[in-house]
Image (cartoon, rainbow, N blue to C red; front, side):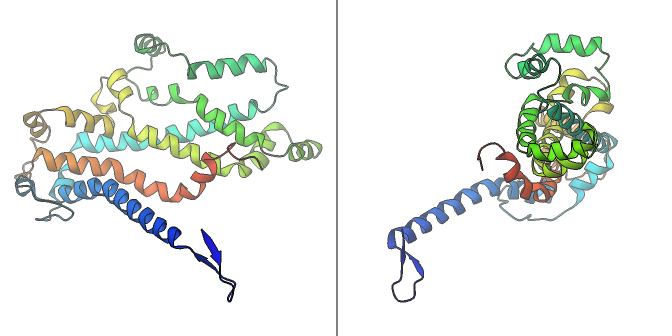
Length: 301
């Protein structure tokens, strides 16, 4: 509890509050260290010599520093192709999904739209009912999406959960702004681009982050709906490598003659770091919008 000093007029913490803050900060530091240590350990392992890593004892710093593990990863055509596929999927998928989500969400703010309730049921129903894997596969095959790059993009154009979040944000924009724009002769598309989108940037950035992380981490659709190795993403390749035996994993990079000290452990660590670092780099730029965007609709001003 805070108490005010009678002489200076300043607020000071009571003894119980000080003890609580100390315990709270200590627990937070322990929790942060527990979350951070696995990543630091993998980072140190990925930069360590493979044969030396078999001895164990590596904590937060590589014992024998080497860049060989990453050089091998980016020198293999299969791995570089997977990186390119993941980057392409993440960028294109995020942009296309944002455009369609914005358009659909704006439509659901116009309740005078014809068949409004029917469209609302259609967009919300998949949130509660799923057809299952086999019907989904048959539909994709009938649409000739299987074994193509578009199986990553087209089925994920609009997510109902994203529409709900973005529509809630659009509804917070004062109706007077929309009416003023209509009086000035603006159409729906101009109102959306010039008025709604600039005021909704926090939630748009949040949806972009959600979709980018999902596309980057996705591997299930690659395994289920593609058979062409050229369509492998980095995450699907990593998941396959993590499930393979040691001998199979070494055969993946059998052609790399420089890999004299390569071991499955350091290879898996390097691959994991490669998949995690891009999201870590992007997240700080969107973090300032994330909290405000995710809290849309939670607080009524």
